[in-house]
Image (cartoon, rainbow, N blue to C red; front, side, top):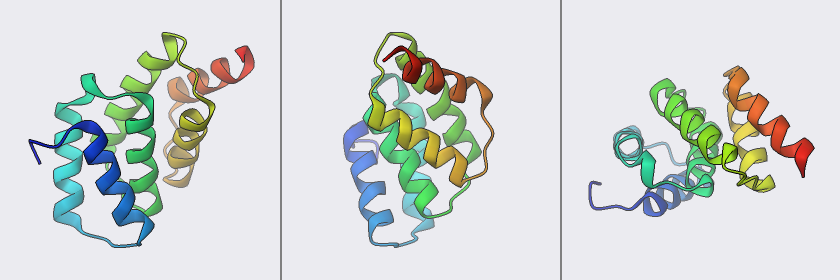
Length: 113
């Protein structure tokens, strides 16, 4: 998956989740590739990937840590996309991952809009 761009990774994970198709080797590859390409991700790529993993019930802590770190950085620049942020909050809640810095960024963006 090294030749997949972040949007390709997110779309692939989303498609498998939408079909409720669990493919652990594919999801592992998406996770590793997205972590390597995190600097190239936009909020939608991060949110869609997190949503897909949550929809499938996949607790990938390294991926979710990367998603949180880069999503917070994007939110701090003022990119407060409500759909992306709400999807991130849903994904983390669905996976029962309490990420206070991410939730604070979501709250700050929501209150400033």
